[in-house]
Image (cartoon, rainbow, N blue to C red; front, side, top):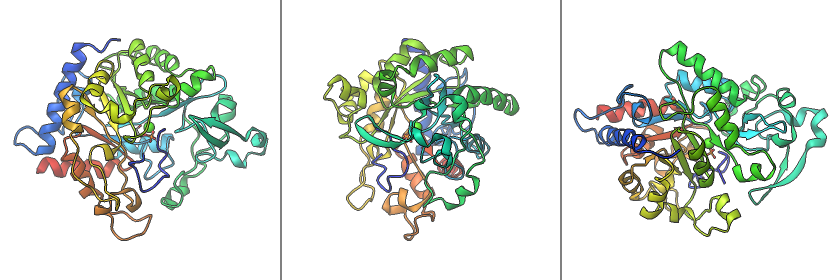
Length: 394
Ligand code: G3P
Ligand code: CA
């Protein structure tokens, strides 16, 4: 369901909610409008714009380091997470979560790890290579659920998008696969060092698939958040998922801010497919669908194309009403994913045809920020921070 960053350039591709929580969100939404419209005196792209913690305390638009700073380092490694913070990300997407055979949560974008680790060069794991059907898609490779944590720790991460990001291959083999528990400890250490809460944004990956395997994700996420006292409304942890039922389940387990991810309009969340629910993302972004989401989540994470669709040539068209519609029911929007390289940008902002060259990413960021979105997932947090400063200066 989720995109993996290799399908370019179409990124079209890819406990009770509580009144108090929504009140904080309202503050975030108002902040967003001020910042992007450049209204005098209302720009809120500053730390501590809201007080009391929670989403309302984040700068807006919020810069979310996608899989860390994956434009510069192999994704979902402590090298990538650390760089995202150092480059100014307000939140680090640490991480996309999948389980090991012995029930630990590790940070990988998908269960198959052939594309992001050196597992293929480990002869002792050659017989683990297999084909499975993940969310309806036959997939061949090595799967986290077939490895113990101790075995996975023998692997090292490598760059996924090698064609576009040859420089990042320099770091192949440098970092191991992080566990979610290590991320929670790293978050504490970084918060102490920086004298402020460091935010993270974990995602439950393929939750229906793993529940069927007897490795449910939500209870594990909730248990770890509770153990680290990070399961509260004001904890600096937002949890996201492409499967609405995963977010509904988490809403019963923890008080953290929750976000429903939305892929292209004609796609169906995999839990809907399994349940025989015919609705698509197009149904979820209607006023009725958004009201329903607002009953158990605080935000949505739509693909950028749901905010500004592209035409057949990849050029931006007119913004949809999604930002206004979501804000009307108190939901924040954190779309995905902005990347600096030409193939990932809207055609309007490409410069030449080199696949590993940057286009006018600043122009693209500013255009998306002008729609009133509350934040953005990006592989290049430093570019996003500078673009936000441009918008605030007006
Ligand atoms: O989670 C938001 C963003 O990461 C989009 O999805 O496929 O990169 O996990 P994906
Ligand atoms: Ca993700």
